[in-house]
Image 1 (cartoon, chains in turn cyan, yellow):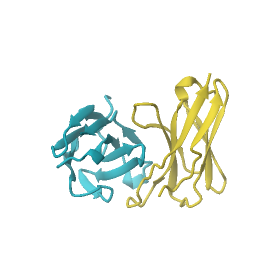
Image 2 (cartoon, rainbow over the protein chains, first blue to last red):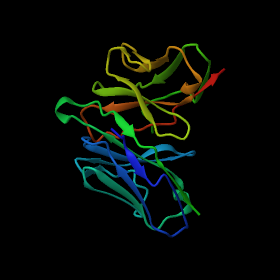
Image 3 (cartoon, one colour):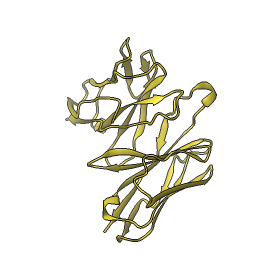
Image 4 (cartoon, rainbow over the protein chains, first blue to last red):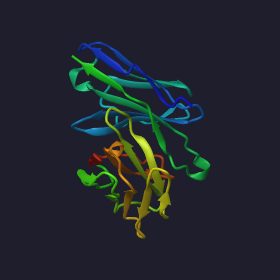
Length: 118
Length: 112
Protein backbone atom coordinates (compact mmCIF):
# COMPACT_ATOMS: atom_id res chain seq x y z
CA UNK A 1 0.00 0.00 0.00
CA UNK A 2 1.26 3.48 -0.85
CA UNK A 3 0.12 4.92 2.45
CA UNK A 4 -1.62 8.26 2.79
CA UNK A 5 -0.77 10.55 -0.10
CA UNK A 6 -0.77 14.31 0.20
CA UNK A 7 -0.20 16.98 -2.40
CA UNK A 8 1.44 19.32 -2.85
CA UNK A 9 4.34 18.65 -0.46
CA UNK A 10 5.24 22.33 -0.38
CA UNK A 11 3.13 25.37 -1.18
CA UNK A 12 4.20 28.99 -1.14
CA UNK A 13 1.52 31.56 -1.80
CA UNK A 14 0.74 35.18 -1.19
CA UNK A 15 -1.70 36.51 1.34
CA UNK A 16 -5.24 36.59 -0.02
CA UNK A 17 -4.79 33.70 -2.43
CA UNK A 18 -6.82 30.50 -2.31
CA UNK A 19 -4.96 27.37 -1.25
CA UNK A 20 -6.17 23.81 -1.77
CA UNK A 21 -4.50 20.87 -0.08
CA UNK A 22 -5.26 17.34 -1.22
CA UNK A 23 -5.28 13.96 0.46
CA UNK A 24 -5.77 10.38 -0.67
CA UNK A 25 -6.35 8.06 2.30
CA UNK A 26 -5.31 4.45 2.53
CA UNK A 27 -7.66 2.27 0.50
CA UNK A 28 -10.30 0.65 2.71
CA UNK A 29 -10.01 3.17 5.52
CA UNK A 30 -13.27 4.81 6.50
CA UNK A 31 -12.07 7.78 8.54
CA UNK A 32 -9.98 10.78 7.56
CA UNK A 33 -8.43 13.48 9.70
CA UNK A 34 -6.89 16.86 8.88
CA UNK A 35 -4.31 18.27 11.32
CA UNK A 36 -2.27 21.44 11.45
CA UNK A 37 1.14 21.61 13.13
CA UNK A 38 2.99 24.72 14.24
CA UNK A 39 5.81 25.24 16.71
CA UNK A 40 3.58 27.30 18.98
CA UNK A 41 0.47 25.13 19.05
CA UNK A 42 1.79 21.66 18.24
CA UNK A 43 -0.42 19.19 16.38
CA UNK A 44 -4.07 20.31 16.24
CA UNK A 45 -7.00 18.33 14.86
CA UNK A 46 -8.94 20.49 12.41
CA UNK A 47 -11.67 18.18 11.15
CA UNK A 48 -12.56 14.50 11.10
CA UNK A 49 -14.65 12.56 8.56
CA UNK A 50 -16.21 9.14 8.98
CA UNK A 51 -17.62 7.41 5.88
CA UNK A 52 -17.15 10.70 3.98
CA UNK A 53 -19.32 12.65 6.43
CA UNK A 54 -17.80 15.42 8.58
CA UNK A 55 -18.18 14.37 12.20
CA UNK A 56 -16.28 17.04 14.11
CA UNK A 57 -15.14 20.33 12.58
CA UNK A 58 -14.78 22.21 15.85
CA UNK A 59 -11.06 22.54 15.27
CA UNK A 60 -11.44 24.48 12.03
CA UNK A 61 -10.05 27.93 12.88
CA UNK A 62 -12.60 30.09 11.07
CA UNK A 63 -14.80 30.36 8.02
CA UNK A 64 -11.81 30.79 5.75
CA UNK A 65 -11.15 27.07 6.19
CA UNK A 66 -13.32 24.42 4.55
CA UNK A 67 -12.89 20.69 3.97
CA UNK A 68 -14.66 18.25 1.72
CA UNK A 69 -14.62 14.52 1.17
CA UNK A 70 -16.57 13.82 -2.05
CA UNK A 71 -15.69 10.12 -2.00
CA UNK A 72 -13.81 7.56 0.05
CA UNK A 73 -10.55 8.11 -1.78
CA UNK A 74 -10.17 11.87 -1.82
CA UNK A 75 -10.38 14.89 0.46
CA UNK A 76 -9.49 18.55 0.18
CA UNK A 77 -8.74 21.27 2.70
CA UNK A 78 -9.23 24.76 1.30
CA UNK A 79 -8.16 28.09 2.73
CA UNK A 80 -9.70 31.17 1.15
CA UNK A 81 -8.37 33.79 1.57
CA UNK A 82 -5.06 32.67 3.02
CA UNK A 83 -3.21 34.68 5.67
CA UNK A 84 0.40 34.55 6.93
CA UNK A 85 -0.77 33.03 10.22
CA UNK A 86 -1.99 30.00 8.27
CA UNK A 87 1.63 29.05 7.59
CA UNK A 88 2.09 25.57 9.04
CA UNK A 89 2.49 21.92 8.12
CA UNK A 90 -0.85 20.33 7.34
CA UNK A 91 -1.17 16.57 7.84
CA UNK A 92 -3.84 14.21 6.64
CA UNK A 93 -4.34 10.89 8.40
CA UNK A 94 -6.65 7.95 7.78
CA UNK A 95 -7.94 5.18 9.97
CA UNK A 96 -10.18 2.15 9.93
CA UNK A 97 -12.78 2.43 12.65
CA UNK A 98 -14.53 -0.86 13.26
CA UNK A 99 -17.50 0.56 15.12
CA UNK A 100 -19.06 -2.81 15.78
CA UNK A 101 -15.95 -3.91 17.69
CA UNK A 102 -15.02 -0.58 19.15
CA UNK A 103 -11.96 -0.15 16.95
CA UNK A 104 -8.56 0.99 18.08
CA UNK A 105 -8.51 3.99 15.74
CA UNK A 106 -4.83 3.75 14.87
CA UNK A 107 -4.15 6.63 12.51
CA UNK A 108 -1.77 6.55 9.57
CA UNK A 109 -0.35 9.92 8.64
CA UNK A 110 0.72 11.31 5.31
CA UNK A 111 4.01 13.18 4.80
CA UNK A 112 2.33 16.57 5.20
CA UNK A 113 2.07 19.76 3.16
CA UNK A 114 4.28 22.63 4.26
CA UNK A 115 2.32 25.83 3.58
CA UNK A 116 3.98 29.22 3.59
CA UNK A 117 1.79 32.29 3.16
CA UNK A 118 3.78 35.44 2.45
CA UNK B 1 -6.17 20.57 26.64
CA UNK B 2 -4.32 17.32 26.29
CA UNK B 3 -5.61 14.46 28.38
CA UNK B 4 -2.09 13.18 28.89
CA UNK B 5 1.00 14.63 30.57
CA UNK B 6 4.51 13.93 29.32
CA UNK B 7 7.95 15.40 30.08
CA UNK B 8 8.98 17.97 27.50
CA UNK B 9 12.28 16.27 26.72
CA UNK B 10 14.49 13.35 27.65
CA UNK B 11 17.99 12.20 26.83
CA UNK B 12 19.40 8.74 26.53
CA UNK B 13 22.60 7.13 25.41
CA UNK B 14 22.71 5.06 22.28
CA UNK B 15 22.20 1.32 22.77
CA UNK B 16 20.66 1.81 26.20
CA UNK B 17 16.99 1.28 27.14
CA UNK B 18 14.69 4.28 27.26
CA UNK B 19 11.60 4.60 29.42
CA UNK B 20 9.20 7.34 28.31
CA UNK B 21 6.50 8.08 30.91
CA UNK B 22 2.95 9.29 30.35
CA UNK B 23 0.32 10.24 32.90
CA UNK B 24 -3.37 9.98 32.01
CA UNK B 25 -5.20 10.20 35.31
CA UNK B 26 -8.58 11.00 33.68
CA UNK B 27 -8.57 7.95 31.43
CA UNK B 28 -11.94 6.28 31.01
CA UNK B 29 -12.46 2.55 31.01
CA UNK B 30 -12.97 2.49 27.26
CA UNK B 31 -9.99 4.61 26.20
CA UNK B 32 -7.09 3.00 24.40
CA UNK B 33 -3.57 4.29 25.04
CA UNK B 34 -1.75 5.00 21.80
CA UNK B 35 1.85 6.03 21.26
CA UNK B 36 3.04 7.74 18.12
CA UNK B 37 6.37 9.23 17.23
CA UNK B 38 7.35 11.95 14.80
CA UNK B 39 10.76 11.86 13.21
CA UNK B 40 12.19 15.15 11.91
CA UNK B 41 10.36 16.45 8.83
CA UNK B 42 7.93 13.53 8.79
CA UNK B 43 4.36 12.87 9.83
CA UNK B 44 3.62 11.04 13.07
CA UNK B 45 3.87 7.28 12.86
CA UNK B 46 2.19 4.64 14.96
CA UNK B 47 4.36 2.93 17.56
CA UNK B 48 2.15 0.82 19.80
CA UNK B 49 -1.17 0.78 21.60
CA UNK B 50 -2.83 -1.02 24.49
CA UNK B 51 -5.90 -1.14 26.66
CA UNK B 52 -5.08 -2.90 29.94
CA UNK B 53 -2.31 -5.43 29.45
CA UNK B 54 1.32 -4.78 28.64
CA UNK B 55 2.08 -5.01 24.93
CA UNK B 56 5.15 -5.80 22.88
CA UNK B 57 5.88 -5.33 19.21
CA UNK B 58 8.97 -5.07 17.05
CA UNK B 59 9.36 -1.37 17.78
CA UNK B 60 8.75 -1.10 21.51
CA UNK B 61 6.98 -2.31 24.62
CA UNK B 62 4.13 -0.62 26.42
CA UNK B 63 3.78 -1.03 30.16
CA UNK B 64 0.38 0.03 31.53
CA UNK B 65 -0.14 0.66 35.23
CA UNK B 66 -2.70 -1.51 36.97
CA UNK B 67 -4.99 1.49 37.56
CA UNK B 68 -4.37 2.62 33.94
CA UNK B 69 -3.58 6.15 35.09
CA UNK B 70 -0.10 6.00 33.67
CA UNK B 71 1.90 4.13 31.08
CA UNK B 72 5.50 3.81 29.94
CA UNK B 73 6.84 3.34 26.45
CA UNK B 74 10.00 1.26 26.50
CA UNK B 75 12.57 1.31 23.73
CA UNK B 76 14.79 -1.62 24.59
CA UNK B 77 17.92 -0.47 22.82
CA UNK B 78 17.84 3.09 21.55
CA UNK B 79 19.52 4.01 18.29
CA UNK B 80 20.17 7.42 16.78
CA UNK B 81 17.20 6.83 14.50
CA UNK B 82 14.92 6.78 17.54
CA UNK B 83 15.47 10.51 18.11
CA UNK B 84 11.99 11.93 17.68
CA UNK B 85 9.02 13.48 19.44
CA UNK B 86 6.95 10.79 21.16
CA UNK B 87 3.25 11.37 21.70
CA UNK B 88 1.07 9.51 24.18
CA UNK B 89 -2.64 9.94 23.43
CA UNK B 90 -5.94 8.49 24.52
CA UNK B 91 -8.20 7.21 21.79
CA UNK B 92 -11.86 6.72 22.65
CA UNK B 93 -13.16 3.26 21.94
CA UNK B 94 -16.85 4.08 21.99
CA UNK B 95 -17.62 7.77 22.16
CA UNK B 96 -16.63 9.11 18.77
CA UNK B 97 -17.38 12.64 19.92
CA UNK B 98 -14.32 12.61 22.16
CA UNK B 99 -11.58 14.55 20.46
CA UNK B 100 -8.17 12.97 20.00
CA UNK B 101 -5.63 15.47 21.37
CA UNK B 102 -1.93 15.01 20.69
CA UNK B 103 -0.36 17.49 23.10
CA UNK B 104 3.30 18.52 22.85
CA UNK B 105 4.86 15.10 23.40
CA UNK B 106 8.35 14.25 24.65
CA UNK B 107 11.35 15.14 22.52
CA UNK B 108 13.81 12.28 22.85
CA UNK B 109 17.49 13.03 22.27
CA UNK B 110 19.84 10.10 21.70
CA UNK B 111 23.48 10.68 22.55
CA UNK B 112 26.06 8.72 20.55
